[in-house]
Length: 264
Image (tube, rainbow, N blue to C red):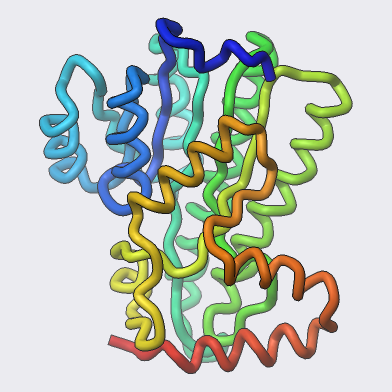
């Protein structure tokens, strides 16, 4: 990546999905304060408008989108083209908690639509655009869950594994082409967001890091062209452990961790 991408005075535009709260909203606040025009997208239009008012209408715009539909993903991409974005924060996603035999199939398929299909669609469309311009950053938001099998949230863990592997593969393709487009994947552990509430669980062991701390760290590492962004020491240690331990041990350990969560 050219060192002048974030040079003072250079204007940028970032598309942020899942921007209505949590990490997505913090990405928007931080980037806008650094002079980047931000496009806020998500399903909660009221929350997006409130964030737009906070940031300032001259520094952002709102494009609501329900990313469970591939058509809506393509429409979102089309609506942002006139702003000439060069940063994508692919943040939308949610989880479903429960044993595989007990969870709702329709809810899991909806989750797969967002966590995998929407992520993939936007990743592909914007990467192709950025490659044509030979500049840009893409940050796909995965999870430490994607590093290992996850009893009691098996579909969610699997969906985040897809995000990680897809990003890693595209990173290598771009590296071989000596492209000035850089892709990263953020793999946080627990973060103090509405994620657990939507998944129907409460973490009784650790509340996690703040969305602000996670977003600040992620943007710093993204600018450093880091592929795997692991914001806490436990996640860094987990990344090492998964390379050494057999799958059975990883699944057992993840199951123990999930015992620290309860349905709400």
